[in-house]
Length: 610
Image (cartoon, rainbow, N blue to C red; front, side, top):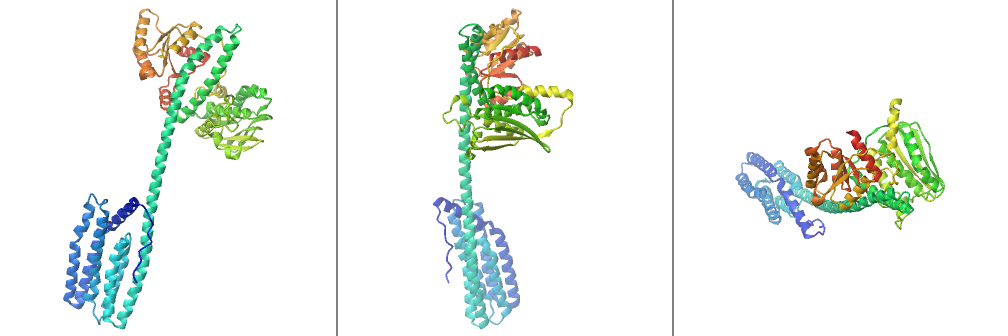
């Protein structure tokens, strides 16, 4: 019975070549150990039969097997062939030829050594060939031609020798070997198919992994390009908006008692709205960059909830909603600034999408955890949108992108803050009924009364030091007169910003000198020193003309003229890498567009530290 080759799987030429390469490598991987084992077996069998039979045919057969050993160097050349992978077909034929020669030598064993009247020796020959076939089959199962070359000649030689002797015992043994041969082919076919399919499956997984890697790389490139685009666009938008905000603040101050003052107020409201949108994008960039690092402390929730109530009560009242924040004496382990930002976004979102009813903020202790629920009776979120609402720029109820409803980044920031603080968040919602966001925080022990005031102040301060702002910008309120530094040097290559800064600061009694590059700044420092009126502060833009680094320029100027000079960095950057670098320096930084009152307050704080 002629054995059938295993059913082949149709593959392309490149895959077939890879399969052949792996099969050949598998065939030659055991060549050395197989040769040693075969030599030991052959010499043992030869010695035993010569001791029993004293036949010269035994010596002849051992001589033939010695010729087989002489072929080993030509087979071992595969491992020294640098182009073995490309010459897989050649080495496959070479291995097939070796198997034919090897198997024929063992197939000659029964004809040269089998005694007609010695059943034990005959049985031993049968056992040796059958055992050799069984143990060697896995080593050649990778390729079907090598299986045939290895199995057929030695078994045909054995069966034919048994049949030639013709006794009943020999015929029975011949039948036994024939059955064994058929079973061997069945096993070999299954093993060959399994090995081939495993290779194809491995190649398929490798190809899939390569495709996934390529897609991930492409996605990362797109993400990087998007980040660069937003960073560049945000920076370019912030520059003129910063000048507008400063000029607007001057007009608002000058026209406060004039009929046109309301127009200046409306102008500043529009500027603050746009600045709030840019701040939100800045917050996203800072969170993604890892610039914002939480500082966990035991924090009382009561002052934080009171601050939120003061912030949003009027907004809820304007919409005819009830805002209830149930205060509590519980303390939690968190970053108060970031948690307040997170809760503010949730409350603001709840008020925005609630048309009737109200918003409830509820706190409950559960063993060693604290649940903070923000519940509204608003429009609700459909199940299919429960994950989309956390995507940046996605708004369920704003398909027309109404600017009055924000950018759709509030919940995206909420999720990022939730992950950053390790405060798990759950969303439960029913369309037309309402939504509940639940935060889970670790419970903390209340601190001594002497420390409560400090914790309360920290909770009320907001996230201004960690993020670009807790809430959308509001027009700055007039505050008592500030002690401001004068004169001040501004290093900024934008002429409009220099003019706007000069107009604003001069209206508050501050003399400002504007320079556009580091060389001009050095000259200004030298001249101020000669006149005996050194600068009281330095303000520097981060990105100067022709790629100059304002931060490094400021460090050089301070090192050369006054290391203790108060220094304020202003930037419109949103690039994660640059933001991280600014954070690492520890300098005071304001992000454009800067609210005029914030600028003045920051300058006052700088000189107060000196």
